Amino acid sequence: MPEFLETMVDKFTFKVATDRLYNAEGIWAKPEGNLVRIGLSDFLQQRSGDVAFAEVKPVGTQAAFGNEIALIETIKVNISLTSPVTGKVVEANPAMATAPEAINQEPYGAGWLAVVEATDWQTDKANLLDPQAYFAKMKMEAEQEVKKA
Image 1 (spheres, rainbow, N blue to C red):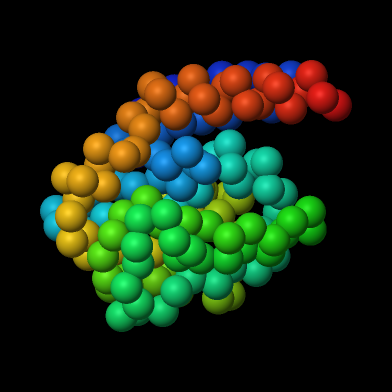
Image 2: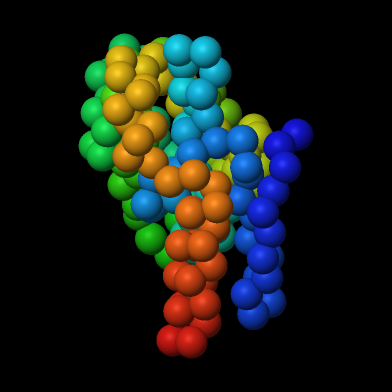
């Protein structure tokens, strides 16, 4: 189980797992050898709403940093999710076809989206946010949204 940075904004609690990196949109990347598992941050899944449908690019697809790797549909919005890593999709979470709500229930666990075989992890890694930087960005965005409401 990862450790978390945690904050409360208004009545919402947001967690950021400290064992992975994040792109600016809130997609996490967790290296596992030369493979990188990816998924949505707690903040992104809460902000998006209950996931009703998730479509991940199929195994064998070439993923490019910043290009679409998955699409989720919620009651509120449809979101194109961008890849935090360049490489080949080697595994898509089978639960996304039958239980996409896992994204909301366990964004850092069973709700992962895909595993990508990274082709240039060192370059991709340099373009991602560490947990503390993403936490600060997420907290600022959450506080701004509360002020708008």
